Amino acid sequence: MAFIIFEEAYAWEKAADGVSTSMPKATREEVMTAVEKSVIKQQPATPVAVPKPLTGTAVVLTRHGGPQALEVRPWEVPPPGPGEVRVRVEAAGISFADLLVCQGLHPERAATPHVPGWDVVGLVESLGSEIEGVRVGERVASLPIHGGWAEYANVPGEWVVSVPATLAPTTAVCMVFDYVVALQMLTRPAGWYFDRTSTARRGDTVLFQGVAGGVGTAFMQVARQLGIRVLGTAREAQRTHVEAQGGILIDFEHEDVVKRCRELTGGRGVDFAYDAVGGTARISRRALRPGGRVVYFGFVTLLSGGGARDWTGIAKTTANTVLAFAGNLRPGGKRTSAYSIQKLGRRHPDWYRDDLATLLAMLADGKLTPQIAAVVGLDEVPEALAKFGRPRAPGKQLVAVAPTQYEGTAGS
Image 1: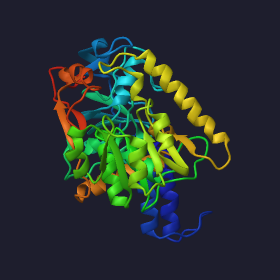
Image 2: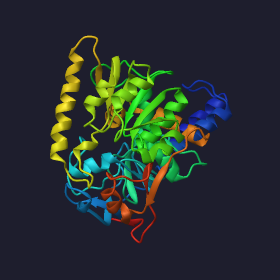
Image 3: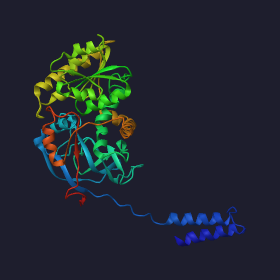
Image 4: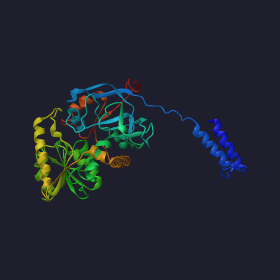
C-alpha cells in the first residue's frame, strides 16, 4: 500500500515540476494536499466502542395487574438499537397511562416482565448507529412509553429533544407527556382518525373533565397562553388550585355540569370537551354547542380507585364511547375524536419534537409553572401508583432516580 502511494506521489511530483506525463499540470501545494489526503484515506479507522448491556435498579412489572405486580430489582438494559438513545435516567413521570399499561388495558401494553414508565429526562449514555445530532453527556427529554422507571432506558431517537441547561430534570420531565398532550389537543388536528381538521381557537370556551390532575393542570396553563377559556370539573377542595391555573371550576359532586356549562356560555354550550374519564361521555356531549366536538384521550373509569379493573366501569365506558362515535354519522351534528400522543408522535415525530421543544422554551422563559404533587424514589413507585386513582394533591407525580449500587454494571 505504501508503494502505491509513493508511486502516485512521484508521478504528481513530476507534473508539478513541468515534466511531461499523462496527468494535467498541478502545483506543488495541490500535489502535497492530494498526497496527504491519500495517506489519511489509507489509514485504518479508529475503533468505535460498542455499547454493552448495563444493569441498574428498575421497577419491573412481573405480570399484568395492579401495583402489587411491581417489583424493584436489578434490570439489564441492552445496548441502544440503531434508532435509539440510551440515557441515564434522572427523572420520570407517573401517569394514569402507566396504571392502564400495568393492568394490560392500554393499547401500549407489553409482555411481562417489563419496565413501565412513559416519560423521562436524563443524560445521554450511548447512541445507536443511526443517531445524529445528539451528544453523549447531553441532557435530553423523551417519551420511551416503556422503560422509564429505571436507572437506564433506551428511548426513541426520533422523540429526543435537548433540555435547556437552566431547567432541573424534575421540572423538565413534566413537559414530556402532560404538557405535550395539552398543547397538541389544543393546536394539532383533533384526533388521529375521523375528522382531523378542527382545533380550538383563541376565544373558545372548552370543558375539561377531571381538570386537577397533571394533564389538566398543564392544559389550563397552555390554554391560558393561547387565549382559550377552560371550564374544568373537579372537587370543591381543588377550587383554589384550578382558579390559580386560570380555570373555572365546576364542582361535579354538587353541580349539574351540563347546566353550569350552559350558564357560563350564555346558553350556547362549549366549543370543545376534553374527556379522559370515559364514564362522563354523555355529559361531555350534552355540554357541547351544536357542531362542537368531544376529544377523548383516556379512560379513568376503566379502573377502580385502588388501581384494579372495574368491569362495571369498563362496560359503561365502552357503551358510552361507541354511542358517541356513532354520532359522527349524523351530518352537521356534534363530533367525536380520539387523541393519542403515541399514535400522533409515530405519524408525525417532527410534531412531537417541535411541540416539546416549544414547551421547554416556554418553561425556561417562565411562561409555564408545573405543579408537582409528589416526588418519590424508584422504591416508592408501587405505593405511589396504588394511591394514584384516589383523591390526592393536584398536579404531576414524579420519580427522582438516584444512582444505586447497580449503576453502570456492564452485562456480558
